[in-house]
Image 1 (cartoon, each protein chain N blue to C red):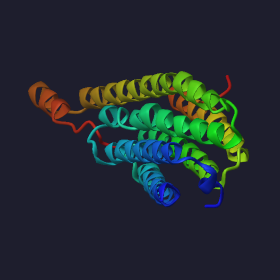
Image 2: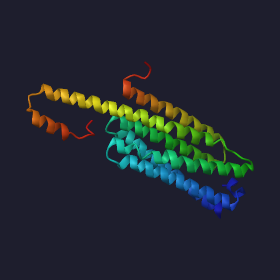
Image 3: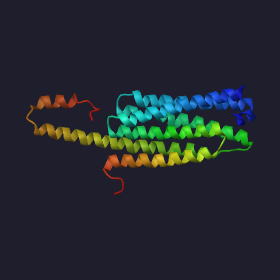
Image 4: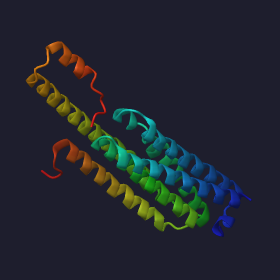
Length: 135
Length: 93
């Protein structure tokens, strides 16, 4: 509270708006992680937090410390660069792992069906009606 | 006046980020498959990093920046290790 009194009015209002925007965007991204239906849809939502949310909050932090210390404080940009570089790598490896697990599961289901005694047409129907999110 | 506005918006932002962390933790606990849990963990550490940055602004202390940087580094390594484990069944071959 006491160090905020040293901030000029324009800086305090800009910092407040940036922080609120970043936190709200991150919350919306996490809500998408909760509400969306399939894994591949769910993976898109939290990137709102890693791009816009991180950008806004890092910008607010840089502005706050630059105004408070009356010099340019830019080390928060390290976090922005690091998150921007690492998020696509993480999601690419994760989606590759999910695709691999799905293909292995599908192959196992198919081979189990070929061992069974059901007729061929009903096997295909069962395979297509299988829910994609089965554990 | 603007200092009061900043204090209130910082508190609201902390509540938002804590809610986002709770939702990500829910996805870690309830995710139907293993890759959902890893995606939830990824969102969880990003939200925790942003919460640490917000605490740093509220306290006026640059020490929180280093905590946020370490959370980002170790979270990335952890998520990549989990994804590699899902892909190959082992982390170091």
